[in-house]
Length: 424
Image (cartoon, rainbow, N blue to C red; front, top):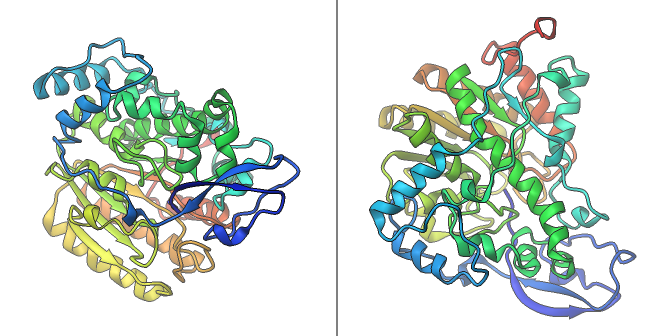
């Protein structure tokens, strides 16, 4: 996933100075009247890094943040008073959740909702991410006769209690500020929008994708595999969003799996071009989670603290080409095979490794991405572990086609089994 960090407010007038924005995000001047608020982008190294954690994050830190909530909004479940109560409350929230839907066998374990796609007055065009990518993937799969629309599983949107499995009350309350959300999604004009619109047009699509990631773990355990055509918000941790990631879907998914699926060991294979600093911070002291992160160290987020918690770190420099990339992946998977025997694999399959991606700066071909995904699914089969795949980052219009081609290849290689539409 992507990030071009936050945060000093300054005023912009009719002509937007694109040089202030590292990646020259496009604005639509007709939509917004001057002056508008923007934010000077700076490196995440300028920010303090939270160090105290307890399992997912420190109970004491979580408690302090929750008690500082300005809104006074509380969950239906009482706030825990100590670490033991904290874990008990988390377990209660998970077991009372409705996110684990029962899915009939006629449907494929491919999860998507039209609510994933973000579209509002052209604002989505101010970020390089293709916020309609998820829908385009499903359109390609449908056009290629790989997947019928009625075979797709639609997830539920998580409740506040579901999100509190990982996030604190105060973090969720901070998203009631449009300014805060604008810094997380890196679209400055979001700061001046009424928050009810931000909730509906920006955060609700993210929340729906969180529901898809959580459900994908259940379907993966039942079917052996699952794909959430979305999710992979790997820059968001329990206490902090960033890099177009407002909710920590990977962390929430894994915590659900620990409690509700009797999973004891999880492997995260993060092959997005950017370092997955969010889940790395979240699971820093949790030995149940093994992280293999293969990323470009020359780009965002440069999170030195989070790097300490990667179990197997593979750094691929800018302009790395397909053969060298795939060789490094083979070596990394061979190492991981000796170090963990997972009950579940969470595969963050960002396609920003593609040649030409404006933010990933790698030079992997579309065929190389297809081969990469095949290697990971073959690894999962050899390990006898269910695998869930998230689509994560990717900043070109061609990404959706490449992802659809990869899913088709997985089906053709019999690494996934999509029921025939005739059986519906």
